[in-house]
Image (cartoon, rainbow, N blue to C red; front, top):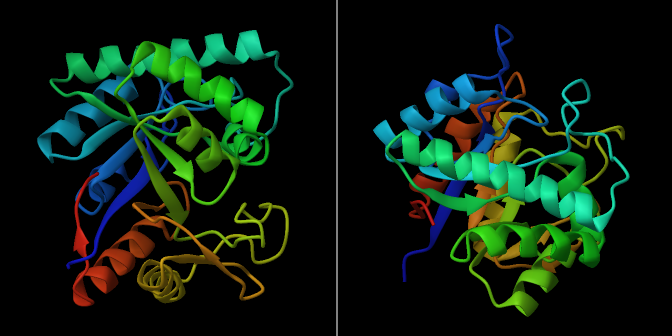
Length: 252
C-alpha cells in the first residue's frame, strides 16, 4: 500500500506594504495552505490574494487563527478567558470561510498558530475551547493537530475530522511538543537534514525527539513554515525526498 502524506505551509502572513515569505513559490510545492486570518498576521487583501492563488494551484485552503498580536507575530502567549478565546476563533474562521468562498474556493481545514497552538498542545481545555468554537461554525472542518499531544486527545474525544501533523523544521521534546524557539537548535534550517528527519518519521510512523526518543504518531500532514529564510529550500527538499522514496504527496 502506497504511503500518502500532505504538505502544508503557513502563509498569507504579509501585512499592507510589509512582505513575509514567498507564498506564490511555496504554493507550487505544498498541497495545503494555512492562511493567516488578520490577527497575528495578514489582512483582507493578502487573504484574498493568497486564497486566489491557492484555488488556481488546487491547494487546499485552511484557516490559521492566532492571538491578536501583530508585533509578536502570534508567538507570545496571551491570557484569555474561554469565552473570549471562543469568540476569537469564531471571528477568524468566519473571515477565512467568507474570503475562501469569495476567491472561488472552500475552507477545508483549520490549524492553530504559534503560541496558541503550543498552549493547546499542552492544555486539553484550551484545545477543546478552540476546536468546539471552530466546529460550531464549520462542523465538517478538518482540524490539523500536533500529533500525539493533548490536541489529538481532544479531537479523538470530539469525534471530528482531524489530521495528525509533524513539523519539518522544528525539534521535538519527549512529550511530542515542540522545543521552545528560544532554545538552541529548536529550529532546523538545513534542507537536507529536514528532509532526512521527515522521511524517517513518516516511514517509522513516529515522531523523533531531539534526544532520539521515538513517539508513535499518526502522521497525515507535514508543516513547512513559510517565514524562514530557508523555507522554500526546505519545502522543495522535503517534497523531493518523499517523492523519491515512493511516498505520494497529496492534500488531505
